[in-house]
Length: 205
Length: 205
Image (cartoon, rainbow over all chains, first blue to last red; front, side):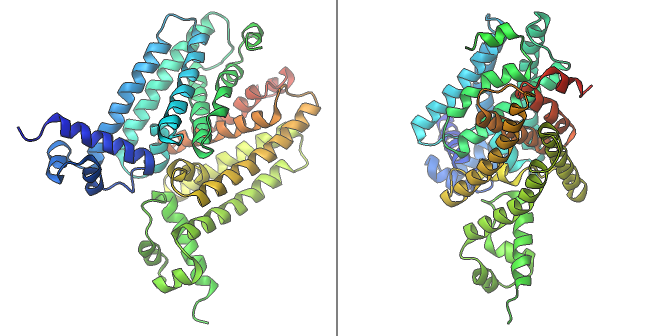
C-alpha cells in the first residue's frame, strides 16, 4: 500500500488550515506536505496541482456546509423561521471557530472569492457555483414565504442574492474585527430586506 | 538627487496594480521593483518593508475614495439622495475599473480584509479604521434622514454598518462574477434596510 487515504486526509486537513490562515497565493506544496507530515511524492500521487488541491478543499468544505444549509432550509419549520435558523447556525459556526482557533476565520468561499477570482478560472467557477447553490436554496425559501404573504419582494432571486450578500458582508466584518457580535443583525436585516410584514417583525421584540 | 518622488510614485502605482491583481501574500519586493522599473535600493529608500508599502497604498486609495465619500455624503442633497449617489458612484467606479482592466477589481479594503486580517495587525487596524470612517459618514447621513422621519431604524450606527456590509457583499459578488449588474440593487436594498417610509420607496417606481 504505502500511500493510504490517511495521507490524503492529512494533506486536505493541512491545506484547509493553511488556506484559512493565509489564503491561497501564499500557499506552497512544500509547506503543505511539511504541515501534513507526508512526503512530497504523496502530494502528487493524490493531487495534480495546488489548484486541484484547493478545489478538493473547497468541495469538502461545501459538502459539509451544504448539509447544514439543506438540513435547515429544507426542514419542516416555517420559511422565515428557517432563514432565522440559517443565520443562527452561521453565527454559531463563526463563534465556535473563534473559540477553537482564536480568530474569526470568516467564510472560506468569500475569502477565496476576493483573493482568487482574478486568478484561476476553475476556482472562480466553483465558487460561483457554490454561491448559486446558496442563492437557489434561499430563493426557494423566500418564494414559500412570499406565497404565504409574509414578505414583499418583486424578484425572489435578486432578494435571495441580497440576503446572501448581507451575510457575506457581515462575515467580512466579523473576520476583520475578530468579533461575531454584529452577526446577530443578520436576522432583523433579512426581515427588512424582504420587507417582512409587521406581525413578523413584531415577533422580534 | 538620484531618488526622486517619481520613483516612489512608480513603486506605489506598481504595488497598487499588483495588489489588485493578486493580493498581498503573493506580492514580492523584487517583483514590485521590476514592474515599477526601479532598483531595489530605491524601494528600501522609500519603504521600510512590504507592509509599510501596503499601508501607503491603502492610505493613498482611501484618500482618493474618501474625497468621493465626503463630497457625496456631506453634500447639499437630501440625506437619502446622498446615499443613492454613493451607490451610483460605487457602481460607476466598478464599471470604469472593469472597462479599463477587463475585470471587476472589487473593493481594495474588502479584498485585503479577507486576505490579510489574520496576518498583520498594522494593516488590519488600518482597514478597521477605514471602515469605521465609512460607517461614521453613513451613520451621520442616516441620523439626518431619521430626524426628517424618512426612515425607521432603532440604532443608526448598526444600520450604517449593515448598509456598508451590504455594499461589501454585493461588490464581492460583482468581483466573483465579473459583473456589475447586481450593484443596481444597492439603492433599493438600502431603503429596505433602513425601513424607508413608503413615499420614499414609491419614488423608485
